[in-house]
Image: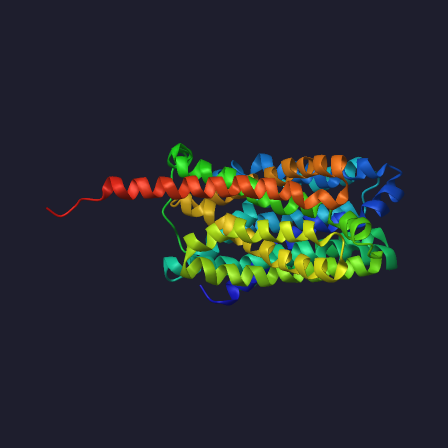
Length: 391
């Protein structure tokens, strides 16, 4: 497999995440175009995420017996058609269906891409670095999707935003067909064997830890626009610039995590909650001082990028031998963490105001640290069990 394959996989993942997150930037335009409330328009986001959470543990495993390239082409084709239909949807119901159906196959493409990146690595220690190249597509899609789609809708037309999504999917589709060879045949793992990894305690600790750690980031991030405006007093344009730089810092975090997890994975994982917790404490102590809060938010962006790689590594290393199934579980746990953490952090905001948003994240970080400690203890006991002293 050539190096350009990783780039094409990253672009493909970007095209999928661009479709998922891009709609966030055009919800007001959709609400106006289809004469529905903003809450109803938000179903395009929430039902998309729900579809990912439901299909994550199932579809990647079911499709794992098929050749990866064919499945990737199918999913990219489905997303291309779905976005094209969405561009010309006569009503909101059609638009909703055109998004939800492809959403079920989101975990299939992403999990296959991450598994393929792992196979690309020549040595096991190089897997995190290879995966981080693909994870850059995730970060870029999350960063650029919403602002680019919003700009297109405001300057041209809502329909052009959906055609933009379709165009990126189509470019990825053609690149996959023409430039990616058939993936090397891998040993077919039975469905029973894959499901059997659910018996492992370390996997459940990893999944719970993923929900907590990812939730600690996105539970707070869900309210970051209000935090920048109400707590820091930034205008809409300045806040947009801060968020864009935050997203760019995600990509820096991806690169750092790729190296850190390759060199010394366990210490790197253990340091994550400490770093995030310190950032949240400092944000609480700033008292709305822009000059100190904004640099902390940029550091938070780097941490968020590191967490994205860390949680993927955490799950797949705990479920070694079933890569597609493991990556599907990772996607489900990550999305469930976001779904649960957002209202949890909202409770602190309701009681103490928007400036308390980091407090909810701190609680989740603390519990994620407990999961990491339990996993470390489990591994230590396992090592002691297999240790045979020299007589």
